[in-house]
Length: 534
Image (cartoon, rainbow, N blue to C red; front, top):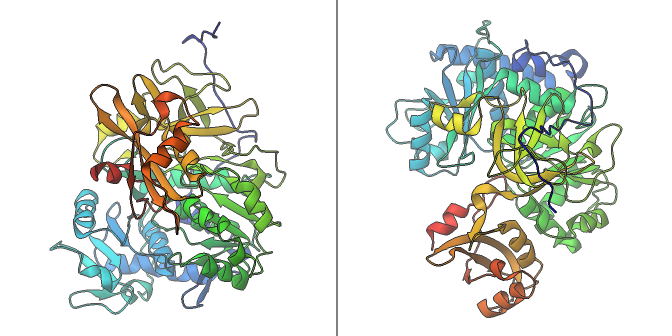
């Protein structure tokens, strides 16, 4: 007989580590530079493209000039500056300088199309934009002050108006509930929305990872972190940039991924100790063992995967073979709640962890798993929607109280839209996302399961699965497949390969061969783009 779970039961989960005291009263910049006297002369920003290095002290000095430059442009407390930038030192200067000015840093992908940029500008109401000259042509007739980090086109200003401004103490008082960052996310539904992240949200999120006697992310002043992931995304912004600044560590700024060989060369040359990555890059690395073996990567002590779950089997074993000095762990987060869980193997005194787990809920927060239909909280090893409540949870969506209310309920629980369970060891396992579930004849089909199966076929380099509408069965699973080099695998072979390994309702009904699978900067499959192609 199945166990009956009633609404009277309340299953809540917390970190294995005790809560810590968090300085909620500090604005983000004061918190991050709190230990500046100890780390002033240590390197912080290393630009891989130029070799230029900025120390923690130089970062602080330049960042303090930016508020004066923004004041000269008329930017006031609570107003928005848009960062349309690739990974570069200027991103850090402006982000921190905006915080000191009491302004809001809004980030955007520099590869956006003109219409996407225009849509975000109208949404956030930015008055100043910092970008590259190559992106200026994408800006439509907006009423903006445009600053470029390189040679400015006509009508634009050079970045020196910020970085060389005469510091006059142009700081504005920040409240802990003031928004400091505006990042765009689709959340669990619909088009991208502005996620309002406050000073307190980011202070709490960094503290949850970095502070206390036994920090979740055991970074120290001797660490050099690879910053290949885009700084405009919460993963790199929070867990690489802000956490490293708090720890007194250094980050290597890398603009783009130029192949496994280039990445390994940088790890060897700059003695990278921590490499935060996403599954697509990890997949390329483990498939290029002969390339990896040419380089000395012994400095690596931690490899982190985040942004989306790893679905390929055997990845951890292959990484351990390639990087014997490093531990591999997965982490779990989302823009609306920063970091939800981290693997305690990062900790100074690590706990044993299981393959496939993305850690335990961060400190000073609570998590629950709820039944998708009833909303009842579930015990260990029961699958449902993951919900989190804590001081790192966003203030809400910009100018969208309806979407905010759908995501954060009246009791303060943020509904992630992710499906998973927590085992008796308090470890979190992600199964899939609610909106990505395929409903076939009343059964739920998880795309991630089928994607892992497809990727186990040597004839397939990459794959994505989504649901296609059908009158009788509601939806049926269809696959988008990228063939491996030299592979001639066909649709019938793929359908038979999957059909032999899954129950009838999970069988692939159609296969579409594509040159590549569209993904977000964090590695998530862009299923809407795939569906639009049907």
